[in-house]
Image 1 (spheres, rainbow, N blue to C red):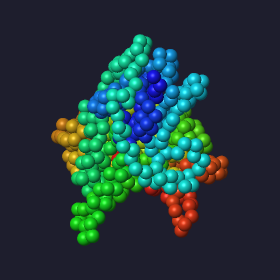
Image 2: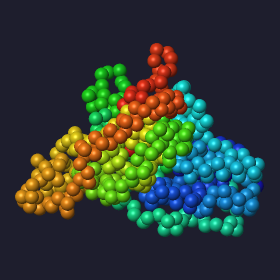
Image 3: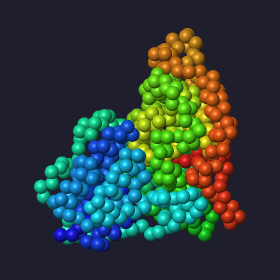
Image 4: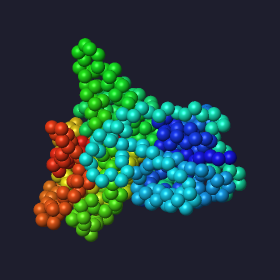
Length: 524
């Protein structure tokens, strides 16, 4: 029997799945997901990602069973899986979505391309986001993003038992997902993380569109309000439980429903503004993924090569351990790390603050910090993650560095210490007057409140004002060098955002781009 393989990757749904829809129109399909040990051995992989994946695969498995089919989950390197399938029962084509993942998946996809050419198998790939393969520059990119998301969502194809090809018999590989231990993953799974699967994703989408979106504008910066004000859709986008286009369409429909001929109430107006702001952030979501698509080396090499050597040779393991163990001594930083460890999520401003603290006062190279944070973020999306790691660390060469002071951020976004006291129990005993700088408490105050600095709460690892001044001086001394300045134009041409101005497209200044890009909500 002639059949095709639908290779599921980070597109764990049936709705708006053009690869499945197209393959099913050509004949029987074998629906396949491959757990690849080499991918899960990468330093950005964590057990929480794997558990979210398994939950999403269960949803997909049930959806296919309801249509008379089955999702086959095999463990092995994907070219070896294809080898065995092809030897047992030759297939005619592979259908999948394009993926802009880490370097391991990029190399894997190149290996699959070579395998397909060697076996004369057609591999049909389809765009999943508004990301363009082999893009030369950013002129007209926004128009292409709009064109992708203006297309109607592809419906679930009409499927019956006859639509599915069986798994060939005597296949010599595991047909159940590997355990985390078999993949070498740490057993820890954040107890308060979001759960995977399309049904959970649709529930989160509905609650955001109909209720929580009225908090979006003005609510996403503070770690107090952000957990409900943000859409919380980012992990479902990262794993493809819902499609970007599906979210864009649903948001536009909700905006349209809030636009009657009569004047809007203040609450409705606020909700509409929030939804429009959310759509703009979906655009920026793809803008950053496009950077990694166009320059895969962004994951492991400075975007601007003039910054090579800036921090790489000054690694301070004690600083890194203080950060990762929530013992920097700055309460807001340590509270954010604790929340991240418990939930797998943090809002965009606090993520930016963590990277800024790592990059400037702690003077840590962005690569190891980025791998650690990738494992902490349930919604880890390589294109957004590595672009933001470099932007917040000042190595893109085109963005004005934004250096966050954690003491000021605490004053602005947690003025009464509710967030810090929730996640750092010792801080509940610290008087309000010492909330932002508890290490300055005199010994008698420490004794009175029962908190010993250096024991119950950490002493700051560095003097933040002095360390930040020194970091700025080193960074800006490099930025002013003629060779560094001259190399910026080529980066703007390839990666800089564009905006329309009186009928022509022009490049944004680096300062404007940094200002707008910094508002990207990494966690939506």
